[in-house]
Length: 161
Ligand SMILES: Cc1cc2nc3c(=O)[nH]c(=O)nc-3n(C[C@H](O)[C@H](O)[C@H](O)COP(=O)(O)O)c2cc1C
Image 1 (spheres, rainbow, N blue to C red):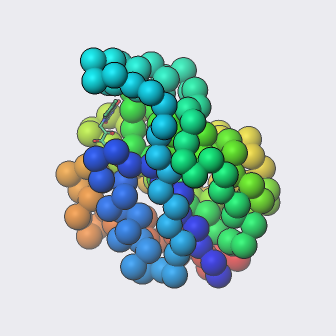
Image 2 (cartoon, rainbow, N blue to C red):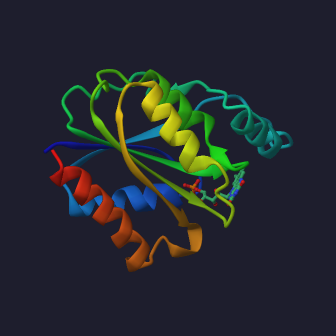
């Protein structure tokens, strides 16, 4: 089974989880970069505003083709209780995803809010089969139990093929 993890990460927590997972499975990792212009002054507020209103932003890579993969995993930081505009852009533009199983995870600072529900909504909007999601507190990214829960979810999605 071929697995592709698509994630956005600014300070490394969500990337860390993706890299950890990829050591357990033979995964292709795609990091998505937010290419929206921000100034140092408005960066935090603009990010929160765009996340709250479920906007997308220009991303790199602009186009991701997942036709070759059987299981897709999407990872996002939580911004203003929602997934980030960059992972939204990736989920909205990914090609060849219809009918594929998808798992989501987010990393957060203690208040994930609606993030998992919104990721589920975006997955289903693109006709992927949502398998489940996990929210991981940033203090737990090295925690074997939390990482183990995500691995179990991915394994179950993997085995249900
Ligand atoms: C703009 C911004 C908004 C955030 N909003 C939230 C939030 O609403 N709830 C929360 O628990 N953490 C929030 N955080 C913390 C991040 O979700 C957390 O540090 C996450 O692990 C960062 O992931 P990364 O290191 O992969 O970028 C926010 C961080 C930023 C930069």
